[in-house]
Image (cartoon, rainbow, N blue to C red; front, side):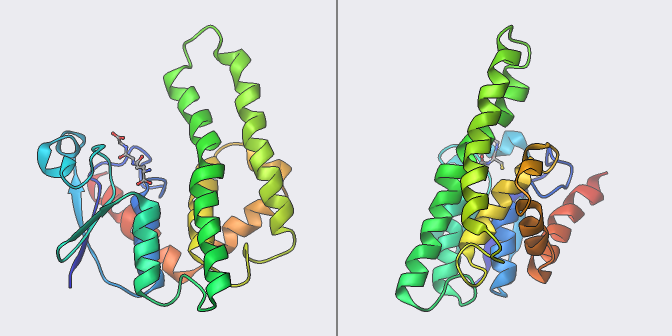
Length: 214
Ligand SMILES: N[C@@H](CCC(=O)N[C@@H](CS)C(=O)NCC(=O)O)C(=O)O
């Protein structure tokens, strides 16, 4: 059955793989599933046809036969549940890997996105400069705990899993900041993930969308 995902026609990140379709592309590459991409303009994302698939008018979505999904966590979990390669066979290890998926999206991503949003949505406010150190420290608190748990490990819990996949896409949002520098094992963790052939294929595919338009 053909899998179709949606992505930005013109990604604001200029092909740096920060848009969340990257998570879905990477997961599909890890499990060896081919997919098609429907590119959407910002206007098309807010039209009824897309809102029917994604109630918040965002990308990505995932369609496979009569199944339509939104939310990258749900999509990656669906892919990982259907195909080998992203979740361990052992039931307890599988549950722990899923906990890391939730941790990435529910515990680590929110302060990172809030800090990012403060930059473009509140940069002109008189209190912006005073607020930033507080937002930085919230991100650092999460990174510190994550870094401590990762320790000298290659991945978060044994073999590479969907938990690592989501965590790395979240951490990559900080790649152009200095926030990762205080946590010595996090950039190497990201680099290990980025060296995976499946990651490279997904990255190149989303970059090609940007390159074609440039
Ligand atoms: N929690 C959602 C977030 C989706 C999301 O924020 N998508 C962004 C692109 S990475 C988007 O569509 N932004 C445009 C908008 O919100 O209008 C998920 O993980 O799928």
